[in-house]
Image (cartoon, rainbow, N blue to C red; front, side, top):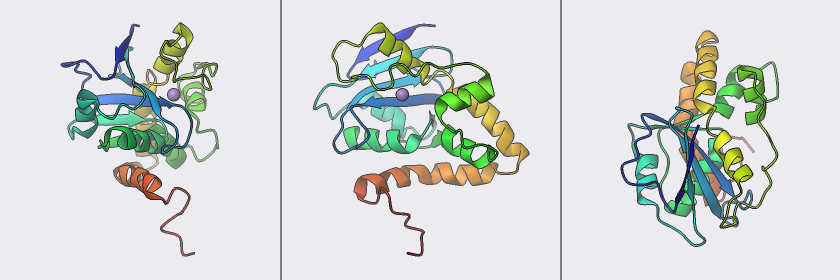
Length: 204
Ligand code: MN
């Protein structure tokens, strides 16, 4: 397994295939306040590409092209946040998307353990480290531990999707999941536009 660290954008010509797992590391959980620091991508082959984002950077043309390429499925865990952050930073709205957290909520109704580490443990039987989760992702020199941690967040999503798709099909909820994935970019836009907590479908 090799992890490739790139500055500011994916290199020209990198082809990650038709399904790309994506995760973001930021300075915090408020998309308008906390800047994007790192974008991790994997084509599901055990390799991760990490793109370091500079302070004030607003463009990453190769990455943005991938995000908006309708022939490439973007695979997230809790995509709602990452899609919002990527859109806020680069102006590119990711679509089509898949979210392993939504899939898990729709089909693993016997548990409330829907975190990435829970899914990796329960469905794939391996343990993911939580160690660097709250580290300083804004540092210009990422440590080996940070790089490995960040990469591990995208290296399991393809296999998780396979497992979850099997369960969704078994329970007859595949089309419901798809409809949720189709709406997810819009949900992210609502977060950015000022309705982060409001359920716009609620009566009151
Ligand atoms: Mn992460």
